Image (cartoon, rainbow, N blue to C red; front, side, top):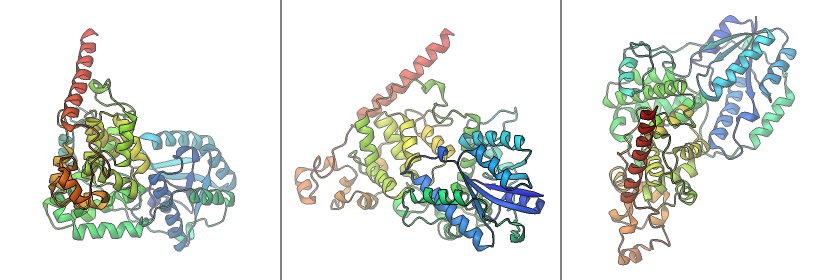
Length: 476
């Protein structure tokens, strides 16, 4: 049997469900990656650049094992029809399926195409510990709140690591699509450079080992402090599929028992939860899940939005976080919550603006987790933070960056401030401003909004939306 293994966001040869089945059930196997230029953002997307850097690394890893990753470039239907014309004995295709978003739409189109070509498709769940339809309430509905979902999640048996025997003798290594390979190379050259970003299965494995050995036990306490840098940094590896979620779970689960270990496992459950939510609410990227908050009168001040994006708000922790994102393509999770709260509650700017900005900038952008996080922060999503609980950026800064070292790292114009006013330079006296050479409004911006007043306006906006919704429901 001649088959195709279609890689998408599962760029690894180990612990890969579809690849295991393809190798075991095929006499000849063609390894494939397809690039549809209509799918991707324009130049300047960190997430996109990271993804294709990973594809290129994966291609080289396959070559080192005596195989070839075939590249198809262009419209999906046209590419697979051309593949069938070239690889004439092809009868079956193996994929790790997507459950939501663009991936789900693509798979439906591909499924119809395979049927027309007489190709048998084999799809498997591989991207999550528990797939979107696996965990339901006793009545058969989907959970909307994390805690009861997690309680059920903990009860279920977890899938084990899948052993893949890579047999290079089965792999088709003919150069079938030279023009597509050249187009791919040209596409790669147009991606933004990501200096210092480690990708590939070896880098993912080393990062997992380092995290478990050095940071896992203290994860619960240390994860909220940006300067400790004690988070796993596995997010982009998981997003790219360079390491299996089963491998991550097994490595963590087998570590010495600790509160940190239990907390990290709960974070893996959150990943499953957000995947389930996206599959349940497929319109959530553009629509608030909570109907009561679909009519919020957002201010959407473009000038303030740009100052937030550039890290020029006058709130040091927010500015440091946004500059970290812009400079590195990554942001600490505590800071993601702080910056999202500031945009939606202090500036009263639509959460969708922030979600799309993060999509452009994050190397680890995952639609389900990013959208879920933004709707959580904006109080518009399932199990979101209550709308009246609004992060105070200054107190968050004082708590999680007590020494101000993280601020000094990314907001160097404040590095001379030696007292606690680094968290709120607007409180510096004239004498202190001169002594520290930080003139507020010149060297560093004054706060663009008053947090106290913004909090009042945000609560009012949410309450107005809620009242309008309730009134409309009562008139039905």
